[in-house]
Image 1 (cartoon, rainbow over the protein chains, first blue to last red):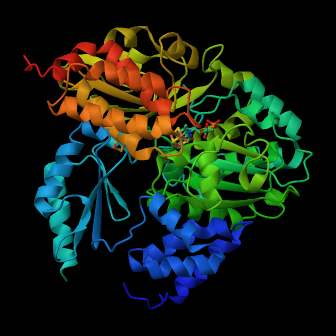
Image 2 (image 1 turned 135 degrees about the horizontal axis):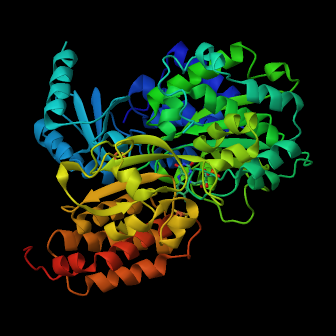
Length: 166
Length: 421
Ligand SMILES: Cc1cc2nc3c(=O)[nH]c(=O)nc-3n(C[C@H](O)[C@H](O)[C@H](O)COP(=O)(O)O)c2cc1C
Ligand code: SF4
Ligand code: FES
């Protein structure tokens, strides 16, 4: 891991400032700041965690604790398209586990945030996404995809492959 | 039935300030902020019978009344939009379709406890919903609805939208508070309750999205009007999601007291069990509540008292339907996985109990069980109940006990590795 300090865009830095101003105690901004970092960089590197600690005057250990507690933070880079398939109860009753197994097979991934060699896809199974009434559901990056079928998933992944390779 | 919460769901553009105001939006908040005292507001909501819609069903007016408004400390309202209870998908609709209704409800909650800074805590996966809510909030700020002298009332109020990032336990109210303070979302030991020592050690109320969204209608009507929708003890309406093996999964607003079988079978709601199959079981209130057999479903109405009388709970209103082909061992295994994954790890009975239970369920389900496993599971569940900081341990123990009591033979059969007939 490189020790070089992370640089962020002016826009991200401005948004961090805005976020900090929203709270009576700036330590509260640790989630928003880390989220902005992940939005720009795709993950939260050790260097950006140190940056966060300094920015908010909290200990690096506390930032690390937060990063490891909240499962949506990526401690390693993920694919350009990160897929999160719900395998909880309402989705499973309508084929969510089969959808996940199909993604594993199609992408050749285990599904623990591992990444395809071309860097396009990463996969994980997740808990209930609050889309139970339109199960099975998944998140493709930041977007919900619901009422999935194997065919729909194939279409989605194939479209990403086409768009992602440009 | 007139709709309290979902009235504008089919109105195009109801997420914009313009359309929302056209339908009487912010009239209730304006009146409350300008001329109601907190006492009047609390009494009105108490009389309406509104109970918290996040799961515990605590009377909302009473919850507000626990706040010492004379305290020199700031008071905080946290709106719980963490919606993570498996089977529950209702607050999402409010965020997506009528974000201004939530903002208006938040203003009313704030006035009740003399709060001038409210937080709306959304689950992190709600990227789109958060964007919609933030856009609505920006509109409301620009229009002078939120901010200094809100709605020309002389009342100052700031609202902050905060996003979690993947942790079910942050839906528990003190986990949520810890998370808002920028920490791991580990629930606090109570007492002290948040009403006394909450966010930043200040008096705090946590209210669910749906609870807040019911307030504007309640304010505009006599309290008895709201109560009339429901039963004597369970007043009002409730959003329910229905998922699993039904023809018309979806999210519907119902009058409390509706028979559960009608909710599952009526063409207005669930539309009946799919594929012409028979009902096997139903979890009426989200994955944490005890499961009902088909026979019990027939006797249960969707209200707090009837659910309790039939050994379950209304919970968050996540109704999960299972047809006759459902594998109960596998279903419980999924719940075991969920709760062991989401345990925050502070309490030993929860951390080790959920993990053990999950491991045993896996081996039974995978055909590697032992005959004594089923009793072992019951023992673990009994040791988890009531021994922890928050109710997450109970939230697995209760399903284990109800699944094993009501569908024991399926577990025994699999544990003894008998071939399925
Ligand atoms: C493990 C756990 C998870 C919870 N998740 C949620 C949730 O996602 N949303 C919610 O509103 N309440 C949730 N609750 C209930 C809250 O602790 C709290 O009772 C509720 O937000 C209060 O609002 P209300 O009185 O308006 O219902 C959860 C409770 C527990 C124990
Ligand atoms: S019961 Fe479980 S989730 Fe709740 S505080 Fe204890 S360990 Fe954490
Ligand atoms: S169970 Fe999959 S979204 Fe709720």
